[in-house]
Length: 342
Image (cartoon, rainbow, N blue to C red):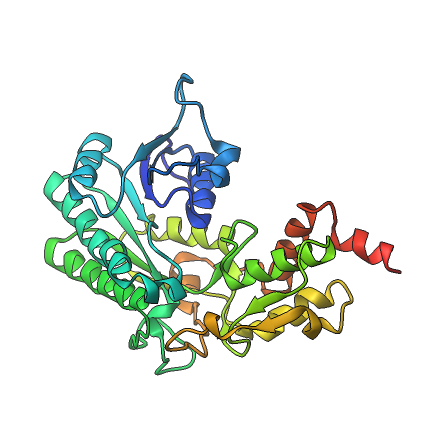
């Protein structure tokens, strides 16, 4: 699908996993990208290092702005000054377990942050298309298998409840004010850029550290929880495709496969021919959530039909991509390890 170059996009959460991949995608399509980043005492732009541009460079097309979804006046000024054609609201406190520990902050950013952004656009008069990042966690204690766009939400965490609030709010503003807003209901999507506190990355970095002698065990929570895991780099393309449609809509983005955390462990250790993986894994109750989500499986048929999107990287390929990348950080690779232990 061809687009006009020099469209302007604003991405909240630009330095996160999804934000970094989306930035690369949009820049490759000729966009001017503005990213919202939170002020921190350390420089936190490592995920966008491949496309980072010196603020003093001429003719740059990536601009970073300090801001936060909890600051309405900042959002209002940015929208008025940037006048984005497209807005991708990816900023969030996105760790489910942590949302039980800081529920008020999670709701302030993940729920009210969306409200502030929508009102900033509405009041500015800027005709922006908006993508809202939803989550499969909204289905919670699932009422239907597999889960699709019409499946009722049944959230069981402050994070999920905040995302449900945002989802419905976007539909209200879309219908009430005629705004172009798409809700993406993305199932778990992973990559080598995933935060190291998320279970998939915790496993792959843990294996790399075990093999290099830096740690003895990987401590996890519920190993029986099942998730529909896809590749984040592919999922950001679905976000972009939603905003290229003539009419806004809501879409599930998933792989149509579900696997347990135990299966992820078996696959990752299995790539290295390590069959007794149990001795390297411990279960720590502190990683249990107060309420568990046991089973998530997405039906992406609407996205395939209307957007022409479908996943290419499935479970086994994803595990290999992530493990190989983390092994590189300790001077190894899957092939190197296997040859060494033949």
